[in-house]
Amino acid sequence: MLRNRYSNLKFECGTDEAGRGCLAGPVTAAALILPEDFLNELLNDSKQLSEKNRDFLRPIIEENALCYSVTHIEPEIIDKINILNASIHAMQECIKKLSPAPNYIIVDGNRFKPVADIPHSCIIKGDSKYLSIAAASILAKTYRDEYMNKIHEEFPMYNWKQNKGYPTKEHREAIKEYGTTKYHRMSFRLLPEQLEIEF
Image 1 (cartoon, rainbow, N blue to C red):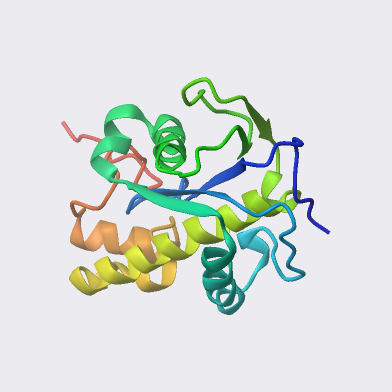
Image 2: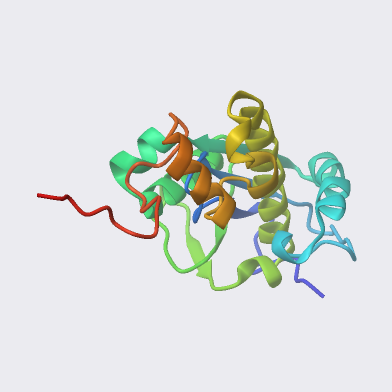
């Protein structure tokens, strides 16, 4: 059973991101504050849930949260500041939009940079330990999947509707055949083998 609180503070916020290891599309973060008495048996780390269950839980989370926000950071920014900084930046932007403002932040993972002077704790595998981080992981994942489904219409040859921009064999074959798009992260190793220059 996931725990509701890490601190004993009322406005504790959970935050997480999705899409960090992808070759294309944004990195997407979500942050939210759940009521102190919030419980849900089904709620778990988004990676442990089926797409159907994530889609089922999203409106429940949105209706019950005291506040929530979602932020996409585009590939152009990822290439400029690197994926770790982009992930942290996405989570920070989400937290700044919350009202009421949180008085404690719990973050999935082991790296974060402070937002204003709000105390925070990084929790490894936090999305399988705390309800608010698990809920944030579901919002981040479902909003990002929606985004990838939309840009799939523009570039169907990469099959983002299926692979969501992750480095599948099919996605890499398509990059080899069709080249890159404005949605690809140019700072990532898009193809497994580096092309050698022939003299």
